[in-house]
Figure 1 (spheres, helix red, strand yellow):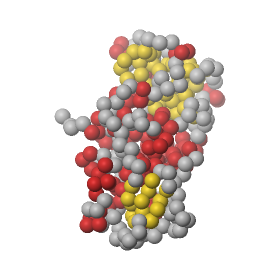
Figure 2 (cartoon, rainbow, N blue to C red):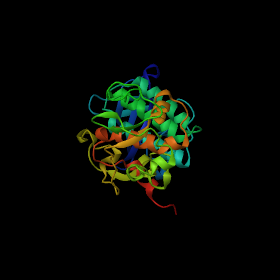
Figure 3 (cartoon, rainbow, N blue to C red):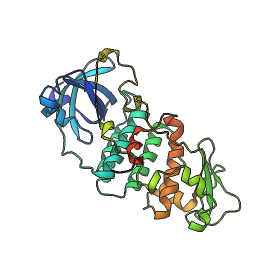
Figure 4 (cartoon, rainbow, N blue to C red):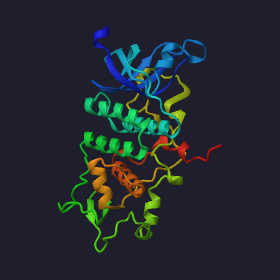
Length: 304
């Protein structure tokens, strides 16, 4: 590829391939998700070549590749902008976004609008409230997949009322809860459904969906197989069996006020965070399937 045909992209995931190379999962603006072999990227001592240092998650890139098969050969990589600096739980949330894309976007299926939204979400993660950024991205991702959530009307087509509460199930959508007019954001009212809500929350009242594992970003095990024989899912970071089981909620209680703020993009209140998180986990669960998200794993582990 010439300079004029370099494509915008990000590394979603990478792992060692043989002795000197890297197998990288890319998200590109023009061609969607791709797998490339970066030959010789680890040829410097301890794999710290300039190319290996560049091919990291959250680094905007100009990329070139060749190949007609499922696994391409990377020919060029240049920094398109400074790397987006994410630390601590913000870094973990970035890995969560990467894993959602890896799991839910088909290979070589372009999503240019989603690419732009993803790049903005990474920038927002560096400074904005995490829950708000994650919920916006999840909603947009479902929309891009053709499964947009209708947060403005219930199953009967009636407008969402802020003083009412609703029950969400993936197969039925939002149904008003008869007889409840006190918002579940009220701690007293929430006691009646707290057990169900706790089943869908991340431990320790976490503020993001992710488990931030550097193991998701950089795998250290060398792959001895030929890239030409790579199966469609072989390079996905979720290929390794996880140590935890993802809770896939089938029913979520949520207030009309929370739904309205989610739909409008208004700032989420403290009482919105847990039900909004539970709603999006339930909405994503049918598309993610039973395989757990590996990016949540270390977030559940006690800090050392």
